[in-house]
Amino acid sequence: MKPKQLILPLTIYNQIVEDCSNHLPYESCGLVTGLNHRVNKFWPLENELKSSKRYFVSKQSLEAVMNEITQTGEQVLAIYHTHPVTAPVPSYLDLKNHPDPFVYMMIISFKLETPLCKLYSVENNRYMECDIIFTT
Ligand SMILES: [Zn+2]
Image (cartoon, protein in one colour):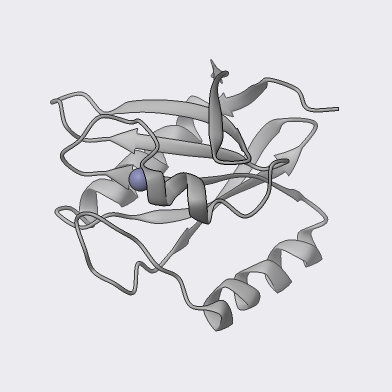
């Protein structure tokens, strides 16, 4: 089963946006985890490319974070990254590199003054927009 929505508390979303904006002009990336499609925590990862167009996380640092997540008992619900100057639409490389159709892709765009966040399910290099339900 692949639910087409994600519940995201605004406090966590605001923390993600703040953390990502601190890394501008570079792209940021990370994971959000939780249970039952509800986000409970986010895990920033270091964009080792320090690029405004791409991001990369080494296998080692990803594994370290994954080990911590496993200990929390939560699931990885989405992988997020930012688009510092472009719209929140998956690029060709975003689609190609997305590792798991059961994990959402979340893109936060800083193109406009107010950041814009979009959620997608990705499978076989195709994407479909999904809903984010912001809660307080
Ligand atoms: Zn991207």
